[in-house]
Image (cartoon, rainbow over all chains, first blue to last red; front, side, top):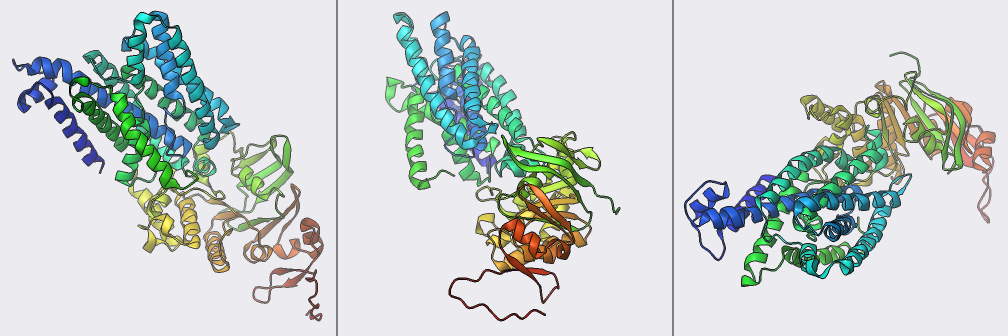
Length: 323
Length: 273
């Protein structure tokens, strides 16, 4: 099933590279997409405009899904995700802080700040969510609180930002895959190459941890340490994703949940989640590009449009307690 | 098989925050037999079991596994020697019995040593021992309470540890399923495993335990052969309930009968043998 999701993701990526206002043949698209010279318009349209954007979207989607999958497993709750637990708000606050201080909106400059913001938020969630050890339910409540504070900090900084860079700051906050470059792709690829294998390695332990702390400890795992490491990795992934395209809502929440349903996996399923995250983000990016003609709405808007109803569906379906 | 105890507690004190729950208890677990820990609610029996399984760090005193402090050994190494089935573990939604039992192999797996034939064999054996072979591909959610409890025990069996600690494995089961689980426990000890089990029912504990530990208020009141431990005085003192002890007509083990009679119901004629 994971292979099917992977194949679907690949098809979606190719389709997204191929479609657009300027038509390019499919063979030219494929060649330009892997950096080959075609001598046609594809070199610029696909090679310089679409490919960096689509690849960045896919990589960011993968990072967000990995972040969300880890978070949901740790919290034993399908509602846990970096955007709802304040990690993304922390990353945004860090990035906006960077824009405020340095007046620089390049991803490379934002990345360390966004990661730092995400980690600060994660530390707050860990400290407030623990009583001796990290408790899943307490962690969610703490996260909601951190989210409010983080959002308030973002607003506060925005009011202080000089007028001339406010538009850039706002564009960044909504989350946009517009005008991404190969530099973004490079950062995203390195991030994925580091984060995804670590997440895959953590998954085996996390699957056992989902069955209860005592059972996991009895099987030779260290629940507190495992949760701490997984949350840190999750925060770094969310921070990197935010640095690349701004905070994109809901992918981290929705992708692992859909992946779990599609693969019928009992417990965390990193590979399927990552592929699903990539597919959903590429799809949202395509919609952002093509759906409303030349309006070019930010991708974050579309992920919210998909994610919002899904969140409501989760709440309606669960009839009370979330387990 | 030696007669030496592999698992011992020495002056073990366990507390939750400032509240001490187990007060300086010393205990040796006899090998290849069933040790049952009994006592009233809140007496510290589950906490003692968790302490023996290194899930609860001692406030003072030590737990020794093969003569070494259990907390100084790598927790993964301990997990290859000692299995614990805690109270109310969580079954992930949609998981099959085989998958659940397979997670008992966790301490034997490494990043560079993935699943092998030996792991499959351990799972197959555990399923057979618990009579779940035919249900292996069923989702755990669809099982009856007794079957589910057997699946959790199978997980602990797949861990292939000589020491097995079970925290109230019969809770929430009807009487037939309770005995089913206890028969399984008895069979494990007969095959050379060392089992420690926390139980609520004194008659069941007396019937199945080779070694009984009676606890009260964080202390061990008595331990040894069930018929020696379960006297009317001791049980009465531990539980605060006046009782008389009669002999189980089937097994000859002690059977506890409260002496208080419900109001308005006539007392039966004395018919002691």
